[in-house]
Length: 262
Image (cartoon, rainbow, N blue to C red; front, side, top):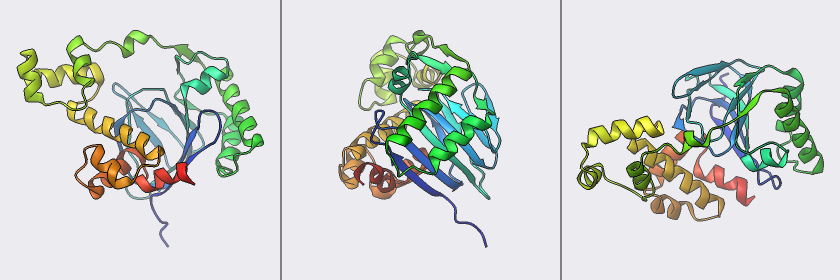
């Protein structure tokens, strides 16, 4: 008997700035290039896990821990036949700072083999609905151990602020047209696309979609009706919204919102 695919659950803790969790079972969804404000710490439970960055990729086998840094563009292709199973802790930079480490750091080790930390995180992943003092204490201890044992370095803020002036002005707009940009700045739209991708890692179209998804997550967390969120964020209708939201997050909008309204 074949196992059900894409049994994904999104959760949120009531402490530590509301750490969010994704329990993905037999996931066959390919996550396109995107980024999070959080540090993503993923337990690889079944099948090799691949993370593709702008200029490199890394492979995390079953039993390892895969880490993606805050605001780092990455894509995650999943096995289309049997799927990948993993459990991700989305850790806000403020939590890292709370643990006595600068909130402006990056993990240099992307794939970690540590049976002790892995076992502790597995223990936490099996108790996602028991958000008591013991869970919080264990999570803080495990994160502290991870930060002490594995190399982190300070990021250069200039790396995240290197957008050219006109691109900064463009991305501050709610929406933009390539033809309007070409006219306003006197630049060929194809050259603009090339420069935009060079500076952000994304095409303008991809950037706008990612921004709509991030805005929709904020509105869903606040409890807004899904249809209203879809329209407010520029989607044609709910099916269109559901398609792209699940593509970027692994769960549909209702499943995501349920983590904040339960």
